[in-house]
Image (cartoon, rainbow, N blue to C red):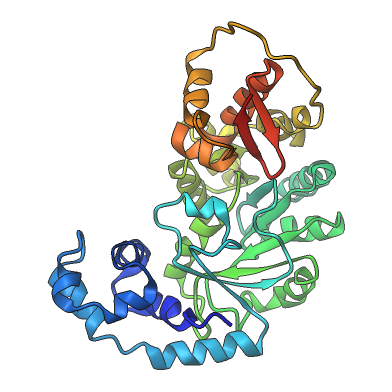
Length: 365
């Protein structure tokens, strides 16, 4: 067990500090442990901290709770993930408000090549259930991780369909890992541990209060390449997740529905407001994300004197001077969604300008 774990957990538990301030404190002080040994006067000078938050750090009374959490982690085979750890979901590191600490139980590789979140209304119709099951079945040959929130309706159907097709599936939870909510889904959640897992930024003992679920939603959106809304009413948690995914510059897709169907009102609005791309099947997702093209790579000879389009030139300039670069970092620095970057990189690869490497990394030829 990491000897500095108690400090990493402790800083996430200080009241009113939050993830963004906690990361700023760690950045200025050098480590989580150093935050707790720093003088109050020095903490006050850190931008965005000031006297009130410095006082909250100095007057902390979180270590007893931290020790309890470490015992819980050890007893229940839970993996703590600090935001600077190599196993922390890399896609989340590009999100400013990502959790300082995550708690994971299961066997999934959270940094696998393809991760898709599938979400929707808790009051799923037969139409929505069939769409969800067909979507997962048709995505299965590409072996994505399927992420959702374990809720009633579309969420649980996405998890079930993933397990039926031997796909890894991970649920984001709005409470500690000492419980499963809703309890009726506990047997499915336990089955997920064999080839997936549970993920939360809440410590044990935290109950599934309503205000916790938007925090859960940012994990579902942030750890995924794209978010797919299958069915949604005009107001609901899936729309919050879609908005968060948009704010993270991730792709959002939605299935359209009848104009007078309450359970499709949210999807129709996302499409109408250009917050989601309209899809009719998994084939649309596969095409937009460039997955099929990635499996048809052929050796090419570099074309001399290629005239680059403006967006291609942006990517080349982002990668230039680096030994190699992860596609998530390219998206971050280029400020483009994954689908756009994947398509442009493929074009540049066919032109012999860039080369793809294992682990979704690219370099200039």
